[in-house]
Image (cartoon, rainbow, N blue to C red; front, side, top):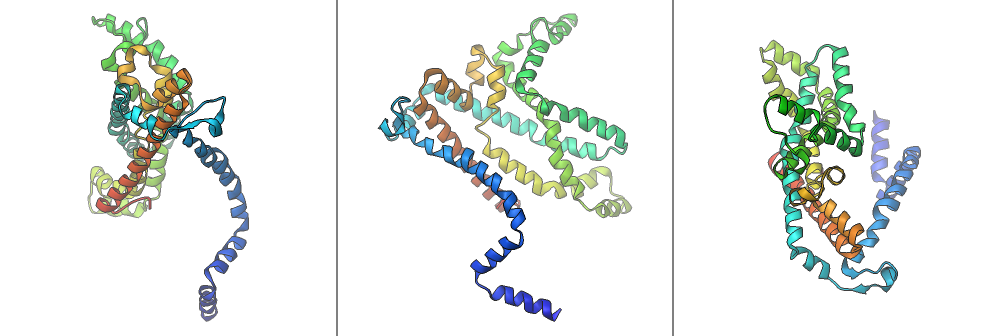
Length: 316
């Protein structure tokens, strides 16, 4: 014990730089495995950030960045005065809020319900079935639901059989956002339960045994043991979800919407795609993308601060 104490004191007495070098040398193999990930981040995440400067230029693809004219905040001014962008921003926020309200709690509920299943064969079967849609691309899912909800699809055929009128689901502005939320939930809820099931497995089983001895019902056990045990993961996922509020499922909407529902479905991601690739206005689309990123950063920092202040938990 005395030798260990002396070793610790000797370690503490060394300069911080020397201690850091010794830690790296001690776990050199782990740091070596870290290098490919850092190279990936550098090449594909940080290097492209240089291109953000074209948001402050009248970028010409033939002249390049060095030959394009600087215009300052011109594109941001046109962005915030663009009536079309105001509608796009509104759609983005609404669709994201719908998904946050209806889809964020869903994996938590499913994970809790699955945790109560005692038959392991049935539990594994259910897990496999609800995870499967995550691995299907949005292109395939779009085709599947377009066939199901088309004028001659199964759903409309059942409506006619029940005596109702046929519904043009993908061309009805009042229904399209609901379709986006439903299909996103069908695809991702099962996959989202993985994180929460992992959080549940980290809870000490003795807590449930003690609660059962004290006569606590299943609902009481979930409310006082399961949910508090999942709280750190729930807070983490909520903060990360807030950072993607302005994303709103761009890939999903691109393959499912059409010009008839642009007024209720065109979000920032699809707007950037259409402006950047459709009209070749790269400076304006970059300005929109930069605005999206800055708002996402602000939401993450704000969400983290509020969670730390009111819930006592945060990412940092």
